[in-house]
Amino acid sequence: MEEQPKKKKLGFNIIKNDPTDGHGGFGVGALSLDNISPVFVCPEDGEAFVDIGAMHARSAVERGIKFLPNREDAPEGKLYWLVWVTIDRRAEGPYYAGATACEMTVNREARRGYKSLPEHVNKMDKSMKRHIMVDHMDEKSKHLLRDFLKSHNEELWERSSDELKAGLE
Image 1 (tube, helix red, strand yellow):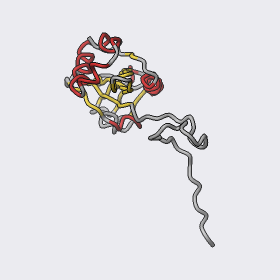
Image 2: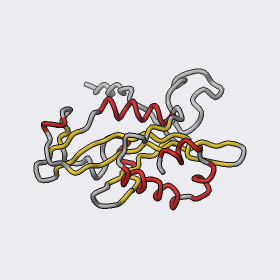
Image 3: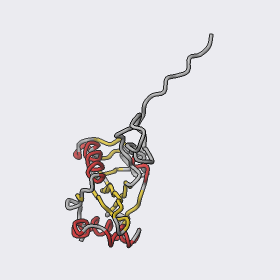
């Protein structure tokens, strides 16, 4: 008896090119995540870094941690900001178009942390729609993020909106 091939499940696709370009068939209207990057900011360690694993909640910060939706259930956690940064292009060149920050805490010893998954998804969407939402970050974290974005690419920073620059001052 011959085995039936397993039916492929339809998963979430990250599409490289414009999904509405041309054919009009499968995949039309799917989101392109090519121009968004997750930047972690840790005020305690004084560092900011990109970890692409955060796109699927598989970053080094998140690995091995059970995240709880209530901040009170995960006390004494180390603060991290996950900032969704979107890059867009205009006539002058590419620039930082969107930046939205989400708070999360991680307690490595207890292997517990706080994170609001709906907030993370909504903030990623807002960043993709070119919103700037960094006002709720603490001052040290804002400065770390600003310095990271400037040092990563000074030209991108210079072409960015005054709203982003003012939000991180």
